[in-house]
Length: 229
Image (cartoon, rainbow, N blue to C red):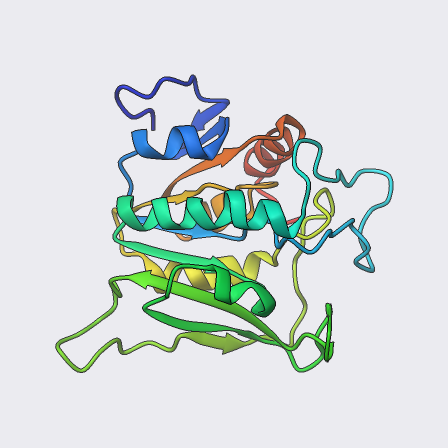
């Protein structure tokens, strides 16, 4: 799915899924996309301490410092840029940084009774998602007929080659909730490709941008092997 005039050669391009090993700030303006679904670095100095990750194979951020300063300098402008390009944008965001982000059209998230991550007030139970732009499932003037989040207490399928990958089940829900058949979805902070894998499983075309080559390779492996890990 190579789009015209893009000044970067794809790292991977097969079955409606394209990956670019590039800086998303430089590449996003060249893309023709409908929706953005992303889980950017949180700016909390995360170092891959989640229980159950693979200490041998997981790869920390190799070209990015996960600091509050970089969240404000890089993540926030990319979300603002995405809102100018795509009809709909959805991004996970730590509650403590919501005030830095562009004012969302709405907010929701994924609720876990047994939260996994630590926060200043204990275990995080709500994984917040900010929504921008139009609701593709909206029907009439009353509003969307679908919820803005869901509860997930079952088993989560998480990539062990990334220190903070979201479960595939969460991204599949977001992809289905925020896109329609024929839409092109982009993830400017692709990581190990969970959004792309979810898009493929939901029958959507998708573009992923990732500055780390090891993560690009991990994403390709996942897409080729058709596994959820």
